[in-house]
Every structure is written in structure tokens, then in C-alpha cells.
Image 1: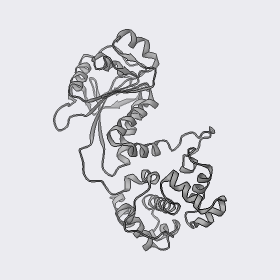
Image 2 (image 1 turned 180 degrees about the vertical axis):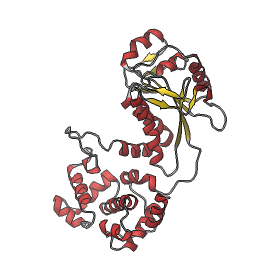
Image 3 (image 1 turned 90 degrees about the vertical axis):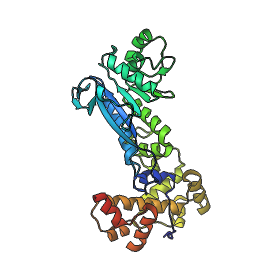
Image 4 (image 1 turned 45 degrees about the vertical axis):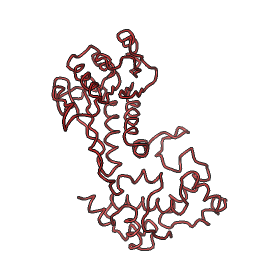
Length: 348
């Protein structure tokens, strides 16, 4: 078993998985306020993809990074492209751009059947937002509203292909890109649901760094299709960027949580020397085999602790710890609280 150190920190791969449960960082600025303007017949898939990125960003950190508000143009009930009525939080005339509750990011949500004519009040809001240096975005054909407001002049934008001809004819000073997503200094546009998610991740990375985005991706891409076309849950041992030998080692570790294998046993199974295994872990995971194995087991224990009613002693045994005391000390080293405190906080 690994010895307990005074303080432990997760290596980069498992840090993402556990980021929401780690001790909170020192208090910083207030959460970024994001406003979504829902046009009639907006794309539900594009909207929910964008919102999912924001909500998941809050889930992977101990303190909220974003808040979001939805706005209807003239009413608080807006019909989506799926003929599902969505209740917005407020109407366009209630949108705040100055003061304590001012929005930082404003995103126009379009859709296949959205009206492409200019909406005067929306243009005024977008012009005022641009003047105040707010970040503006458009989903599907939301960039058309930005173009009507004049905030896309001499910039590139992404639009759904069905709207390219219209935009090129109507807005000659705007470059309509063939890319699915465009990120300018303060303007972000996307052409559909998949690129809506990527657009928001680009914004989140700009604001909160690659670690946060990597943690979001780990949650949202857990069911991605493998290279061989097979639909299966994504795990570290399926990462095609890692050598086959390392992936075999990770599979062995994942399959032997309750009774961890020693490094010599791992070496025998894969036919590699101990030194070669240590180099593989250092080069690709920036940690040692024993350290990764411990992080893997403590992550498994955290999931059991917070998602089941099993006793702490049973969880300790199931995750390969020599005693519940050893497990409790190790858990607190990583997460800053004891297992019982973590469980109480989760229930609270």
C-alpha cells in the first residue's frame, strides 16, 4: 500500500474527475453572468448544448463559475423549434447591462425557422452591449441578429449553411465563414448544436483555463463513439493517444481495485520492466504507477461514499485500503475533509 503523505494532490488526469470535490479555491471574482435571448423557434438542441456547458462548469468546481438567465423577446413564454414552450426568466426590456446585476455575456439563440428580419429592440440591446464591451454570441443563425445590430462589421461569423446566401447578400461587410464555429475577440458564433457546445467551451477556456474545460469534457463526452465505431463509455484506458502497454496497465488497475496489484505483478502481466512502466506513467500521466493507482482507488471510494449508503469501513475494504483509519486519513489528504464529513456535506 502507498504510504500517507502530509498532503496529497491529484495528478492531472484524475484531478479533472475529482475537481468538484476538492477544497474550494480562495474566493475570487463573482460568477460570470450569461444571458440567453430566445428567439421564437430557437433551436432547443443548440440552446441546451450551450447551457449544458455552463451548468457543467459549475459542477466541476467547488464554487460556481457562472449564472445564466433566459430572455424572451416580448414574452416570458417562448416556443422552441420542437414546439415545446419554454419559460424564460424575463423579457428583453428587463435585460440589465449596467450595475451589480449586469450581464457579462449575451447570446442570441436562433434556429432553422427563426425570423431573419431585424427586431429593433434586440438590435438596440446588442448595440448597447457591444458599446459596454460585453461578450456577444450567436447560436445557429443568431449571428444574423448580431449583423443587424452592426456588431459583426469586418468580422467573421459562423451560421447554419441554410442562411449563408441570405447573410452574404444582406450583410456585405460581414464575412460568412465556412467553419462551424468562429471566435473573435468579443464575438462568438456557431452554426448548430455541436458547435454551440464547442463555442461555449472556447469561452469557458478563455475565462477559466484548460483544466476546467478538460473536466467538463470528461463529463459530457463519457459516451463518445470509439475509433472503431463501437458505442461504449469512454475511460482512460480507451484513450487512443496512450501506448497499448499503458492502456493495458490502466485496465489492470481498474479491474483490481479491492485487491491492488503490486508493481512487480503489473510488470509480469504486461511483460515490461518496472523501470519501463515507471517511464510510461511519467511520460503520459505525469505521475508514478503507485500514485496513479492510489488516486484511482480514492476516486472509486469517493463515488461509493457519495452515491451509496455503504459503511465507510466497507468502502475502505472495497477500495483496497488496509483499514478504515488509513482510508479516512488518505481521503482527507486529498479532499480536505473526512469521509463522514464529505457524506454529511453531500446530504446537506
